[in-house]
Length: 109
Image 1 (cartoon, rainbow, N blue to C red):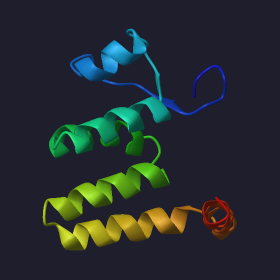
Image 2: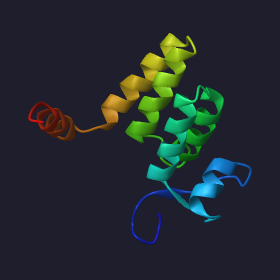
Image 3: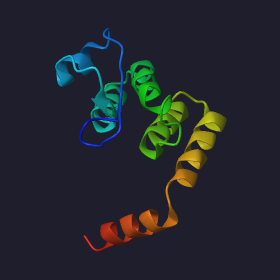
Image 4: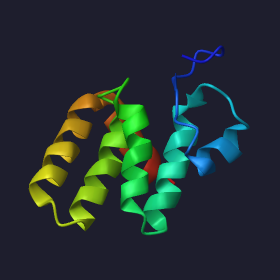
């Protein structure tokens, strides 16, 4: 947990993209790690994206956005059973209320 109360995790120094973003901080907000993982996924670097997602999922195994992105990556790698399992786990971790609020917000623009 970071001083402001947001979830944060430690990362390995060899992750240059993360190190540049955080300026060498010992703990990184999950949102920053998700942004890096998305960049890697978009750049067709799934192994790097999975490594970054691992930094989130190790301390927070029910982190729905990380599980979802991991599922997308697994699907693109042809690992359909793993992708389905990850997506199902992601949907089980998000409360129905939050899901309905998100869908409502999207539909109203």
